[in-house]
Length: 213
Image (cartoon, rainbow, N blue to C red; front, side, top):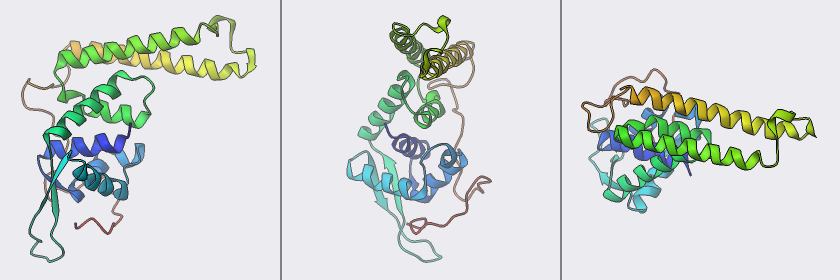
C-alpha cells in the first residue's frame, strides 16, 4: 500500500475541496514529508493520477488576481471515499504494513466509528499473535538468539517488534474504550488541516513548479 495515496485522499476529504498546494501544505503540517515519501512531486502526481482513476474530481478555477495559470481544485468522489476507508481499515489491521502507512492510518482513525476502530485494532492484535506463533514454531525465544548463531538476532528483533506493536495496540484500545478522542458521529471532529492562507510553521519553503497550479 502507498502511504501517499492514503494521505492525499485524507487531506482532500478533510477540506471538501482543495488545490494541490493546500494538500502539500497539510502534509508538511503533519510532518509527513519527514516520516513518509510525501514530497511535492509525489503529491501532485498522486492528485492527477487519482483524478484520472475517478477517485478525485478536478475543478479548474479562475486564476488569482495576482495572475498565473488557473488553479485546479480537487474533491473526493464516492469511489475515492470508498478507497480511502478501505486503505484506512487495511492499514489498521495489517501488521506487516510499513511505518508510514500505519502512521497515516492512525492519523485518520477518528474518521471511523469508535466501535469499529476498536474492532479493527483487536483484529490487528490477533494477526500479530498469529504471526508470532508461526515464528515460534521454529524459534524458541527462551533459548536466546544464539541458538541460530548471529542470524537468530533477526528473529529476536522480529519478536521484540511484534511484542512492542501488540502492547502499543492494546494501550490504544484501552484509551479509545475509555473515551479518548472524538470519533465519527460523536460531535465536532479534531481539525487537523490549515485554512486558506494560514501560516504553516512546519513548511519546508522549498518551491515546486506546480505549487501555483
